[in-house]
Amino acid sequence: MSFEKESPNYLQQRLFYRGRKFNFDVHTLRLPNGVEGDWECIRHPGGALAVPITEDGKLVLVKQYRFAIEGRILEFPAGTLEPNEDASLTIQREIEEETGYRAKTWNYLGKFPLAPGYSDEYIYSFLAQDLEKLEHPPQQDEDEDIEVILMSFEEFEQAILAGELIDAKSIASFFMAKLFLK
Picture 1 (spheres, rainbow, N blue to C red):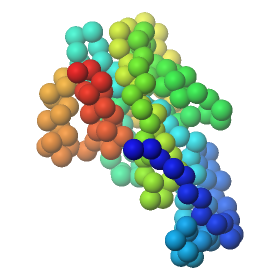
Picture 2 (picture 1 turned 60 degrees about the vertical axis):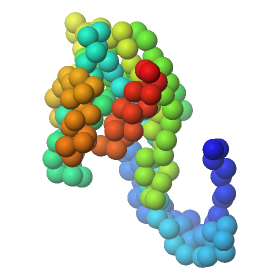
Picture 3 (picture 1 turned 180 degrees about the vertical axis):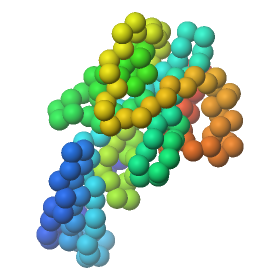
């Protein structure tokens, strides 16, 4: 199944907020079915995520404090694309900063919209293998509070099924990686 864009008829566009990582717009538009109204949208440059796997088959995850949910969540390393940056470069940088590992083998798993009800953000998902632990990993970003966690595929799947706090992009990418590795 392929995705075909159907642009609405934009009647008015208003920027409400320009932020460091995203913008918040409100649009008055006419949908392809003729309905008119206001829709809010977070405009985001996109993100890249890695499913890193160690030589002994462990998944490398991060437990990270997230202000929006006021707590720590288990997720795969990921980061926001810089302007005009290829997603593969974003994730190579982010995996080193967030986990202290470097991958020698990369496979593209695919891309998917993160929250299409209110955002245009896409996540580019990669499988990272043949990891080496960096002797001198780069500094984590100042605004990150991260703990690196190693889990087996079975442990992570059980955590998902048990309802542990894991973000949707990590769950989707985990299952994409499992299918890729079969």
